[in-house]
Length: 305
Ligand code: ADP
Image (cartoon, rainbow, N blue to C red):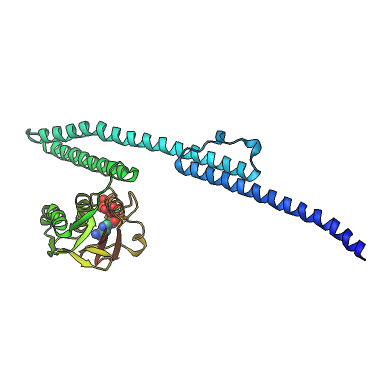
């Protein structure tokens, strides 16, 4: 009996040692693998991952797959960076190369108007000037939105009073509103928010310009400010043509124009640009409308930095 117990113990002890050795070995391998994975990911995050830093013959199949994947990622991010740089160059070329010819077209159209020319020619000169102005606006808006998207120009939000920004945007639209006898009203407010005054003025102006443009003569446009716990809200309301419910989801898209406004001047970039500007400072824009009755565009800006 005692002999059998000794035999069992004699077999079990080496088996236990073998098991312990196997477990220790696999634990060490796992630790080594985690360290390698950690290093690979650290290098990838820092942007200096290279497969050549690793000896493939010493890697597990999992590590090899991750290394290949990270190589692909770093190649595509390199390509993206190069494309981005090319796009920046292209945008700046378009902006520079079109500035002078467009300014010349507008200048010569202006000069032609001063000559005694036949009535048919006056209409043609007006058409040339109008289209050149439209092209200038289109290029400006495209260049601006491209630069905002690429981060070439960035908004610099800081805690500011809203009143001066709203008043400046409203003053800008007044001459256009006066031509249509559309009233534009706004109340003084001491509300403050975190925003970039120059860019936010442009975003609010775009909303006001639309409000006046899409409101028939003798209508009204109102600007008001409400303060919430987290956000300040600027409402631009009009008594204009409104937007159909099924179109509300599209009006912020680049180049989207409702079929019902074909006879109005526009290129479909105003709202897109306004949204880019507001989103760039951590805010957002919401639109509500009743077709045929009017619209309300609300800009939400963060109250505290
Ligand atoms: P644009 O005014 O140059 O067409 P926007 O990007 O500013 O371009 O506006 C996109 C579209 O949204 C407009 O074409 C119009 O259909 C609709 N829209 C915007 N603002 C208003 C508004 N206040 N009232 C009615 N429709 C509007």
